[in-house]
Length: 74
Image (cartoon, rainbow, N blue to C red; front, side, top):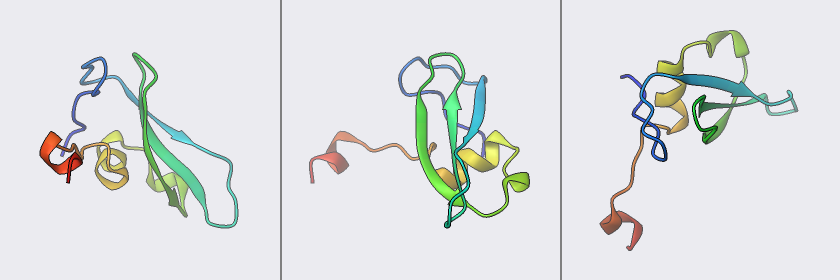
């Protein structure tokens, strides 16, 4: 599944993958919008070589998950 558009600027193609410094749990990895700089949720990964595709990263980190107002108000 392709990454959904950025929830802030609407960009749908220009995404990057960010990684933090490795610590005892792995590499903090997230997808970000290269147009406006919005960072998505991050998860720890063990092998940074496997996370080179924005499609994989968007799916695994939760970038593609969107909440409706009804879900948020529960």
